[in-house]
Image (tube, rainbow, N blue to C red; front, side, top):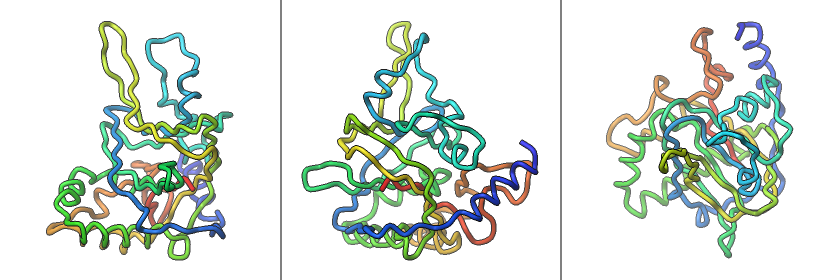
Length: 252
């Protein structure tokens, strides 16, 4: 990719108007931080279960890693998909991540936040998270909500995601069964039928400070946080510059 294209994509993000949903309401009592997804290769996938079950393929496995479904590449115009039922998040290599979820009283997924910021240091973060006591986890949820809330952070609308089957699948891995590769979804969640998908932009220095306050040592720094659409040949890397970073992507 040329530096000219990269600058165009960066400018589009910079010019994007922030949105503040009038109905925003996330009660930290309903914010769960225990859902984990993993992928042994390729990106994280988020899709409608019936859509992926019906995905046409003449191969042993479906290539969900197609660049056309990567959500940030879609947004900046570097790729395009006609499907409203699927998107991916590139992270690079084998990866595990938390999902922050808000469920209704009857266990239907209402909102989901994917902390892309943590992709580069999740293994260290998970160790600290697992050692937290109940009060510490509640304080953590308060901190997370602060760095999601559109009053404190910029929300950029990326696209719609439609889940007509009301079953949202998240992430996939492949395993060998006999001589055939099979796909396995690490999470299948009952959900509502449609989400608005936003990128959540936060102040980088404050976000690093918040995550580092969770453990006895340094969890993250500018060297290991994940920036969507990193470009190692063009500095500064990433779609955002200055003291801004993508905390993650929210399905709202």
